[in-house]
Length: 438
Image (cartoon, rainbow, N blue to C red; front, side):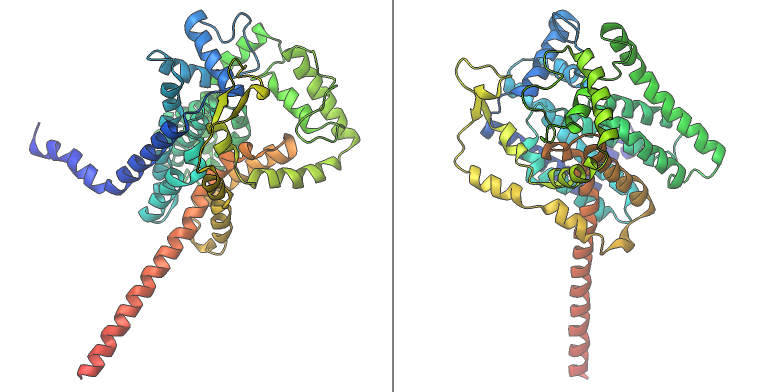
């Protein structure tokens, strides 16, 4: 190894010292919170742990019956960690690692959609340090792996203009893996394709068509086998998950209860496959008969998406009562934490929302790439959760990650304005001093 090769890593470390510090501090905060909160997987998070155990012990997703309700990527990711240990604290490192890795991806995307490196570092720091992301990080939720995969797909897409054609297949494959983590990724593919056509820098129409088809190929290669599996295991119309129709019905029904149905729902007692099919049927029928219901739902759903993300503290501080069932909400409770009030107050501050709205004033700083990638993803999330399905604060997690990119513009503008004011003040002092001497 020649001297240049030996010093290259050191040069990279020195050049990226700020990013390394941000990532390391973000990881440290997440691990410290894990040790302080000691979260117990409950509700769906316990279900994912059980599904991961099924993959290891029985080589199938769900046991004794295979499930078509849950998607496979989160259990598969946890199963890899289970090869070392099944302890709850160890498994909590899995989402923490995914969350920490996302800090680096946000920076990498920022380097391609911002005018300055400083703004990319600010975006990475926001995701590393904003309390919502830190407090939710040790929970065995699908959001952490999903965001990691979506950010990786976004990074591949913003690199397409300078990269080889096969990178489009990679972008589609990553988006497909995101779909198999959280089905909502289906609604984000159009935003990625829109970027290809409007802001990717691919000038030829033929090349844009080829890139779009290659992205589609990458998606199909990943999700195709899962579609076939569900068609064989559950029903031909099961799709990605039999939970889709059930949630659609909860979003559009005559119960008067947003996002759920009180006791006595027509879906009660049905298997997942039949409930999925009936849910789509009843939900679509209700929309045809009551189209104006969307007006009320959109307003309420929007509020839910941007409301205080108290779920981050709630789910990371749960414990199961002695002899209780982790799947039964009546069997788990808050773990006593003396400074809970302070954490709740920190979560109540709508930092990202305020900074994101303030960035509208600095619209001249919005690059073409940011406008045609981040904004469509924000709009897609809003459409998904206020028009197609239903919203609650936790479903706004990906929206808040996208707001990180917008909020960074505001902070960067303030930093540069402050720096400019200092320089101008120093210059004025020097001029005054020179005038006094003369």
